[in-house]
Image (cartoon, rainbow, N blue to C red):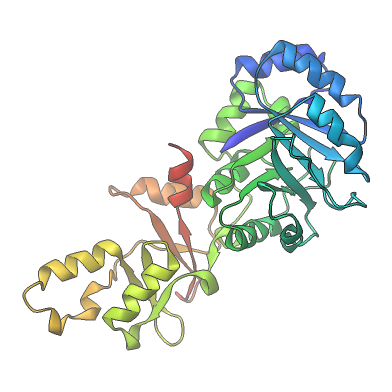
Length: 334
């Protein structure tokens, strides 16, 4: 996941000094906020003289059209317009080759993106726009999952309330870029903040139930109705490489992964007509409680001497409620 540094969040130093510090720490993107002020392009001109770090421009205006000529004259790598403020449809001329984004605030549904599906990404404002130091609203975890399901080929960017823990969760969810402002500049150093944002969680405020894939979106099969076709179909449609096994009351019975299917097939390769389906179930799978924290999850993973690619999530009655998968986190780290 790329870190986009909000350059105007540092109120204490001249802009050139801020940019030089960010460049020295190899930040991925420079996030430039424009609250309907064309003078921002004067700063962009200066930034281009100082460095070649990609610019991530976020414009809040009622009239996006008045910025198009400026964007042609001063090209940037990413440009986003705020959906709620625009009173005209956002239309880019062909000369603008930047990655194009639509920004929405927390109350706005991701479905508004359907009118802009030629854009490359959505920017989810997870706090109140323009207010530095806000707290990430966990409802945005649901919005991210919803958007990725509706538009799997599009990217998700997030702005607001991103600290070390939130960054870990966002990476795990497959978010492409997160904007960091006050957190980045209020730590002991930019280097320390970047390490927290890209390497580990430092504090647990969110519970697993806040960001897990809920059971309704998790591939599952009924323990009492197992057959080979159903298992393979569930794993295939779910696209996680695994399916959870539950009984009619949603009690967790185990899971079946691609590896479990393969091992069972190899064991009974000479007589596949009588394949014992229940033998495929990993009944000793590692699970975690929905009310546990990110730190609890990390400690659980570290305590095992084998790799964990997914964690079924259960409640205090041992009923399956969802799953945590680390596929996106692994992709984002390579």
